[in-house]
Length: 170
Image 1 (tube, rainbow, N blue to C red):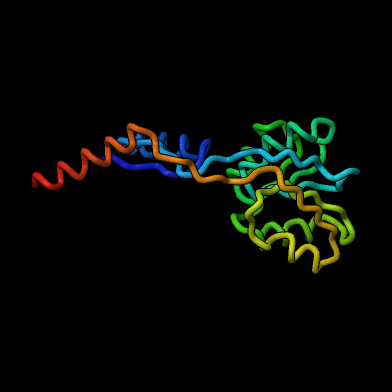
Image 2 (cartoon, rainbow, N blue to C red):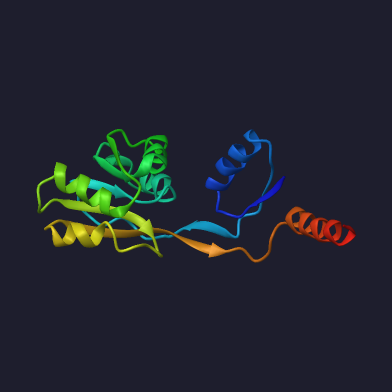
């Protein structure tokens, strides 16, 4: 079966490999592209870093070159793997949502700690909301934004046309 994979890279490529391994024919055509911002990190040294997105990991690691030894708390296995691949050494993963990440951090760090949250322009309230309510300082740092692509790649459009034509013939 042909499957259109529309998520942003690099996650689109991982999904395509998974689908191909299951016998499908993936066609990667992201509808969003992740664009780093020019925002510098906040000054100072945080007590820990919160990662709620795989997209933030490589951008944050590159811009925090001297601080990759800082403990990282990541949402889920995939974000934790992205953090390690980006060069962060001390990475702990929570289960796959912001509430679980907030509970993990609150259980391991003392209230009052400063947490740096590299994130996208569009993000959920958690874990920052729960952690701030628990007495932590959360510095949100917009490291990227997701933008819509202008058009799908030619091969995706041709595949869609082929599918429609094939359906008409049946």
